[in-house]
Image 1 (cartoon, rainbow, N blue to C red):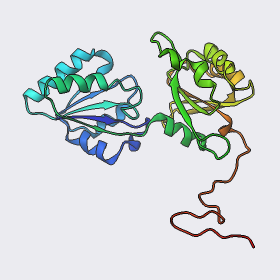
Image 2 (cartoon, one colour):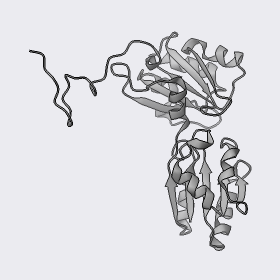
Image 3 (cartoon, rainbow, N blue to C red):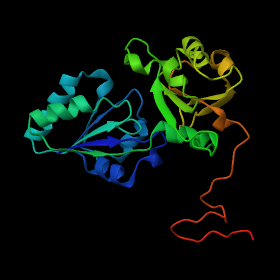
Amino acid sequence: MVYFVGAGSGAPDLITVRGARLLAGADRIIYAGSLVNPALLDYAKKECLCQNSAEMTLEQVIFSIRQAEAQGQTTVRLHTGDPSVYGAIREQMDLLEQEGISYEVVPGVSSFCAAAAALKAEYTLPDISQSVIITRMEGRTPVPEKEKMALMAAHGCTMVIFLSAGLLAPLTKELLAGVYRPDTPAAIVYKASWPDEKILRCTVETLEQTARANGISKTALIVVGDFLGEPYSRSKLYDPAFTTGFREGTHAD
């Protein structure tokens, strides 16, 4: 049996209870060593075989899983954050299905959630933004034509941008080609929830110089939008005048 487990955003205690239990029981752990906190391997039993997939190809990962299956072992494929976000799990699952190997996916806390927590921010503020775009800049690997950054930036909603800390000059240009202003609030969150986490608040216009001044070129999320600003409206959820399925709103005479 194979379990694709979300490792969480970095802090070892942010893995889910289920994820920790599966790590503790695994015979083999194949972990994304470029991003997964190695402290999570402390959950593993002494005899567990731990392999760093940063040094492996897809074919090598599947070969290792195949070996474990032949020995009746349980494998945890440990992915950073939540496996569904830039986790490259679809290609692994398809190959496992072709070979008749059973698997499950266990969600995790994505770094975009940890970034909001670090910023003490709410992505979906009433009257500011009710949508969140998760995307990345085009670099060595392309993005679909309809998802070019300038097109994404045309919506003006909250944006969380992965895998782009080393591309801030072109990113800024693309954001400004959308509807964001030079002074639109932005932030760079480096290694959210890790011990060496850094939170750098800036604007769209100053993204590149802020990162350069702090020596950041990778392992950081870029968040953009007026949700980082001050003005917003109170939500209806706890408005005494608003009726919900659980309480009757009050009405002024």
